[in-house]
Image (cartoon, rainbow, N blue to C red; front, side):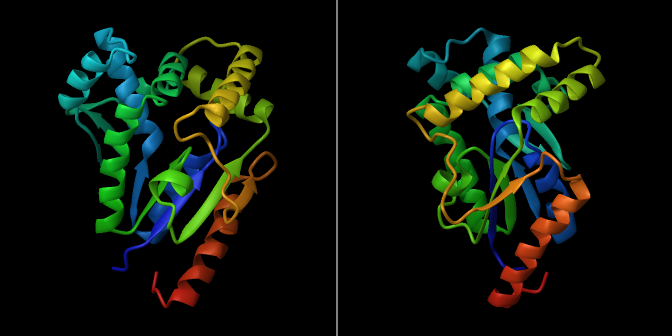
Length: 225
């Protein structure tokens, strides 16, 4: 199988993960959820009470931490934490701690190594700008903040937790600002990325739209899907 990288960037709640998983299934390639990797680390920081600004404590935690994927499940030190990492508390911790250089360097190195071995699709905040600046295909998926807040509220309620959509929207907008203005690997829209606004599109419509660009690349590069 040909080795190629599909980078999917964009703000929280825009639908990146859902779209990337579906495209991975269509193409028969691996989906790497970088957001889940950072969320898994955030969960461990919360559980252990580790201060991510304490360089020594963070280094010790990272040296004794393993994040992997197994049949679509996010594994933290051998535990399936797929559902546990989708809370608002973990989201906030992931957004804040992901700006720490040591944490990002470890996970970026793992991600880049994956991209050298196999075809994959990866979503996050800085995939096209930092992790795979030479990715063959780049997408930037976005949506209005009110739409993203409604989606996040639905996920939280489905997990049996109460939430306030208006408050979630405020937190999402604050997170957008932090992600775009942080000093380390900010959320970036690279010029060559295909911009996709999912606010008024269904998931199937968006997948078909993205697959059109992917198939055009395959044809040009002589790749058989």
